[in-house]
Image (cartoon, rainbow, N blue to C red):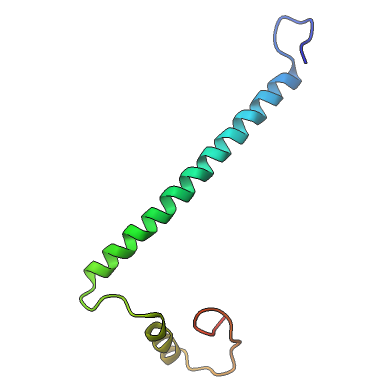
Length: 83
């Protein structure tokens, strides 16, 4: 990959740049996975502590959601049976 020129070739520069880009993408992905899950759990525990009655269970949440949206013609998909 080396030419007889004094400086590095364009192909070598692009190769190094793509390796740097791939390394940055891998590191960002790893940090995103680590901190996004932990941040979500921290926010969830803070919400649970701030609410006097705590968070509703999934069935309670689905009943509250069904009471707000009383339309029987919806498709049934997901946790609460709605799309």
